[in-house]
Image (cartoon, rainbow, N blue to C red):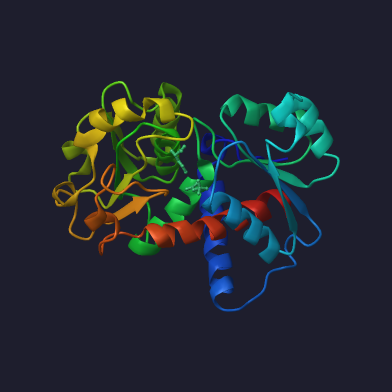
Length: 306
Ligand code: CP
Ligand code: NVA
């Protein structure tokens, strides 16, 4: 049985196949070709311990379009939020459902869910990883650039869950990635090691630094994310001043290639990690990126539950 806990556990081949499936499902969706036989009669539980717009809606609609059923389970409303163990939750829900997507804090909780349950588990974001987002991002880059291998993606900002997963995802598909974060806000060491291991197989170049200008030089893709992730609200004031030199604005964009695209997983905070003229400007592809959450995740669901 296969899970999606961290992209490091998927081979380059599996990722590329999933991207192809996502492309096919998107084509079918746009052309009125129904594919509601693919997960007919299957049920997916969606456990959320943090807020969500895109992940929740794209999983719910995705399951519907594949002919299955999904159930939103806020952790406030299920016994998990009152102290029932992850292990008992996994064993119980495995008796009803065909798969679970979970958005929570600790990556270890997602791993425990997978270890104790007997159905596929999908990581819908933890403090350390956001694999579903990165599959949609890779699909988006492929659409705009026609390929992945050999391109350069620059991530500027917080070394958070999205940055960690981008490191691994890019390395797995042979895309060069340069991450620039302030000192003390680097990506986690394990993700950097996993990315470098993957890069050794694909030929990707993985660079981490504290220099945003160097990172975006000649990049094909500029990517940023919020400076204050869910669960870090108490650090907001301090972070906003430290991160200001890492804002993606017009001047920074000018160091990238002329045809570079701007990406952001959303939700975005204009005037902080990105200026309005960039995110709402001609190089931005953020809403196509958001749409691709639907197609990429449907491909994941078919792969794991089909
Ligand atoms: N990008 C993303 O995961 O968005 P949501 O928090 O709205 O799900
Ligand atoms: N890094 C952000 C991503 C939100 C989709 C967070 O964890 O809040």
